[in-house]
Amino acid sequence: MRQLLLSAALASLLVPTAAAQTPAVASTSPTGNATAQRPEVAAAATRLQDEVVELRRWFHAHPELSNREEQTAAKVAEHLRALGLEPRTGIAHHGVTAIIDGGKPGPKIALRADMDALPVTEQTGLPFASTVTTSFNGQQTGVMHACGHDAHTATLLGVADALVALKDELPGQVMLVFQPSEEGAPAGEQGGASLMLEDGLFAEFKPEAMFGLHVFSSLPAGTIGVRGGPLMAASDKFTITVNGRQTHGSAPWGGIDPIVAAADLIGTAQTVVSRRTNIAKLPAVVSFGSIDGGIRYNIIPDSVELVGTIRTFDEAMRSKIHAELKAVAEHVAAAHGATVETEIPVGTGNPVTVNDPELTAKMLPSLQAVAGVEHVIEPPLQMGAEDFAYYAKEVPSMFFFVGATAPGIDPATAPSNHSPKFMLDESSLDLGLRALLQVSLDYLHGAP
Image (cartoon, rainbow, N blue to C red; front, side):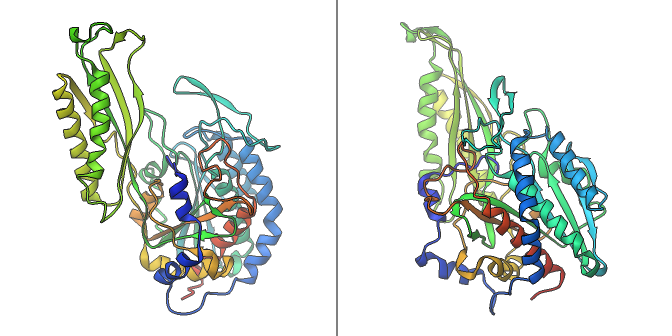
């Protein structure tokens, strides 16, 4: 999940409570009772449980960064071939797809799992913990599946196995999408969902619905979170370079101090959200994540570079915040006698991840069937971003969260996704497989 950083306060909102559950479920639920779990789903989950765990542990011990998922893609393709499928490889660098043809006519759907890991040095102490290291942005770092993409890949391979075993009686077709670079392509490269689409993902196979899942530390194991409409924020990166004039630190009047100007700019930029944006309508965030300037304690430098992120749920609000932040940067810098160079946004960020409301309402009983009605909740809007959003712009889609934190651990304080201590309770693999398989079968068989 790209740039997902949850505070304990936000995390606590995701933990289901008795007060919050009932109206949340009712708000997206169609009329009628939850579907029963399919016996073939239960049988497949039992049969595949050990295999999926083994696969997840292999992927966890062999993580690869975005656009570098060579052995991960090879492992996926090898497994698909062993199932009798004919994978297509090399999409968006290391993406892998395969089509399962059912024995009966029916709909076309797509299922997606992301495969890339993060530049994080693992601190879990697991026997299969990653020991992989690499150079990232000029620094040595560990590589870790700190966001759970290892679980997603293993889960979808399990679902593939189950669907292949059922294919003679399966109506329709299923496209399996194993996607690289969800966390974002390295500087100067393209990748992820948008590049898969550019490379013709849907050119010959256009699904009528698409489904994906994400394990989530802020939900307890055994719980599923889903909501119709906007789910996860649009994400934009920005850079602002404040240019002053270098001078000796003992004589700041001899130059123009870009550090003081940058500090003022950072503070004033917070008013873009707190005073200029109607956050009663939808939430928004402007955060600075990096400040780079200066090299010595007694030298005022020529320039300071600021890097950050903007999160929004509305395109008009998104454009307005871009313009407001640029104006703040220019005017605050000018007040200090400095100038700025802005790139707001840098490239094309992720759009809002939107679950098709009708599809989500239709498939909610399928999720309730495997988790239990009381364990399917509607989470609040998430400021984290997901490039699954690109698929959701092309076809009606549903993306849902699977709780990953073990019983006895408070999800509000558990190490979050992207933490070096992120710890997945492996029961989430079983629930994820059951949920994705049930959703797929119910949709293909035309469940109301």
